[in-house]
Length: 93
Image 1 (cartoon, rainbow, N blue to C red):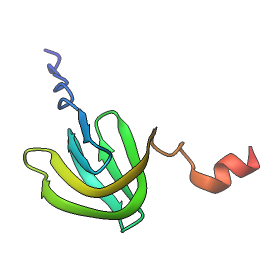
Image 2 (cartoon, rainbow, N blue to C red):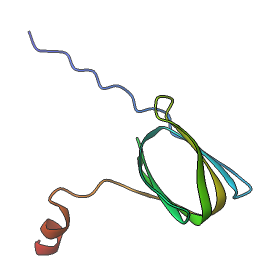
Image 3 (cartoon, rainbow, N blue to C red):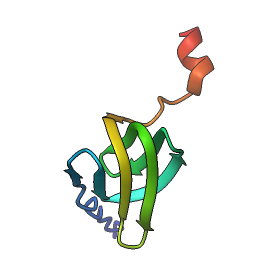
Image 4 (cartoon, rainbow, N blue to C red):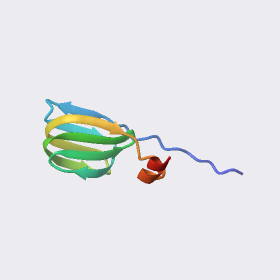
């Protein structure tokens, strides 16, 4: 008998930006990078890149999938994961 596989639905992912100074992110899976000028957060919808000034992660709860930031938020951008093969594979194609 074939084995049943069930794909768990991705956790809900939302952004709540208040006055460009407070950001709440849900659906957080992992924090890849965080500094006063930028951050990269892995979510179920891709990697979220933050740009700003005086960024501070005030809360991180990976079990709940939530992160909170304060500071000046200048930009939000999503990227998907890196293509298979990495940099050299893309360069030599």
